[in-house]
Image (cartoon, rainbow, N blue to C red):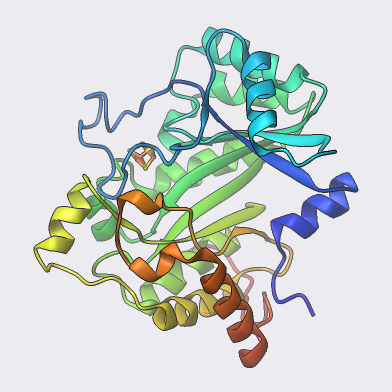
Length: 305
Ligand code: SF4
């Protein structure tokens, strides 16, 4: 039994073979970094989660070829171009158009995935994404992290929940696939609060979710609070328990893109157990089996409150 709808099996169904992600860095920044909304970035962010991304200059094709040679197993033929660093729609429209048009035109790219923020999706940008979506599927990944305003203020997310609601409505209306990131283990959040965020995303109509463990990384403001003893990191058991509850509350058809997180090991402060990704995934699979977890078993349809 498949306990949850994984990205790998979904891609296999959709494209008929294994599809590889190419991590690309379009050279963006964020409004919470460049002074528009702040300068420090989100409290947990050590640099846009793009440590292993290939920088893209004027020529996306060249970067795609380099990225392919880094990740691809022999015989790999299909790739998703993933612009994961910083805010992938935070640049002048003509630059976005040039970069992303070059990307979707590459014959080996089967989908374009862009990590961005809901407050960086103006009408013209959404229109461009919609146009690109007619060439290759476009996925927009949004870092919501939490629906709770007090946590959003603490992590310096920089936009209120209605901005997220409005952005996903406009993206979904245009037929663009949306994947939402949420963090499990943010300071001050109880398991019930975390489950409410999962439920909210589950009912929002978006197609995908990334569940991420909170990583405390060196050089972040979050690390200062952690080292000052202001909060503690989750144990592996606690994480799995909360994650299971979230999975059960998601609609069965929602694609789960991630169950943990990909923190850079060398800058990880806590929780240290998360560095052993293989063990974590084994423990998760064992727990899913033991607890008979089934995605959607506690999903409740209904309008957002
Ligand atoms: S918007 Fe994303 S990349 Fe930018 S500071 Fe926040 S988490 Fe980091």
